[in-house]
Length: 466
Image 1 (cartoon, rainbow, N blue to C red):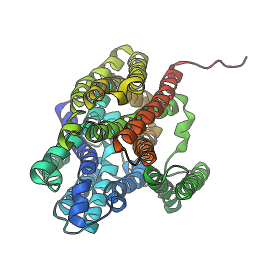
Image 2: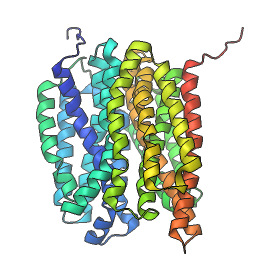
Image 3: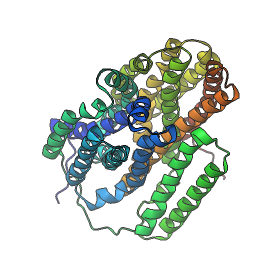
Image 4: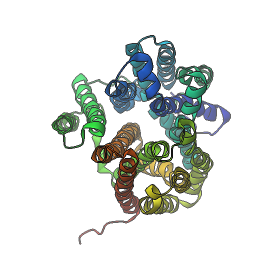
């Protein structure tokens, strides 16, 4: 195969957007379905614990498939992977829209998780392998923008569609966009590197997948049972043992399923830590603000979901701009500026948030997309480009997997703190919710300070002994 020429043309942009549409759709459905839980419980006659599997089942498949994306990209052509992922997601969407039973709804969500697990790392792989290096920051910003908007769009879109047309419309409205993306992607996606037959280790895969699945189940169980319950602690212990076994086999293997030596790179590891913590904060706030507005502020689900929409618009405008700053001025300025804004926003939430209205929370939240636009995609770009070319696919797979797990854990922490405070004040749900949200804000501020330290650590060179 002749050497691939990196060039930023219409075909490349269309291919990135085509893959991004499915990634966007996956996150939108995930956040929109949280609004649909009451309607699903009424229609299918299931409990709160059972209905959570609409999200949990999706996350389980996502966390099992995404880590092996580096293997899939080395073994198969990018266009083939895209078509398989899109077909799986389309079939899953149709099954969900028509599901007469709750079990079939879960089957559809599993198929959607399979598609998203393949597509999300694929989008960033296309950017890393095919975009000219001088425009890499800008296009990584565009790719990040596609998925960064989804957590804010999901609740407002879900609230509107459920109220106007019912929960099945959440899936139906996506179908024409998915079909169009399938056609455009199949016509425009190019292959930049040769594929090769690489060995697949079933044992490594089972250990890694089971470890991540145990982490997701533990985080979801902690949101209702508490972080110190025997079940949750047992699941976390099981996850650590499984992942430790995977790491041991991976380090001993000549051709591991995922090269864990990417974490030996200091810039990459600190960048991963920063992005994971920001993702956890963003998804936790995406749960806390609409929930607080509904319980304490007596807002409707649609109005509460729309509180995050202005921030989504700001993030959409700033993310490519942040990437352009990286291309022109380097990574340090936009990343550290975003990290400072993030600490400022979380400090305002901790000091003022739970004692005001949902609208005031939404106004403070406007700073969070500014942080994302300046620093998240740039941290991904800076971390991944610090790796050698042969490890970038592994770094991309690990980045996306850990980012998804961070979001799940962030939401679980916030939900568990609110549930615990409500249980302490059963006679006054408003006071309990207010106290839980306030505690969550202080915990998120602590995570934000750690994230700032990680971002600063990327650019502070440690002293070497003489």
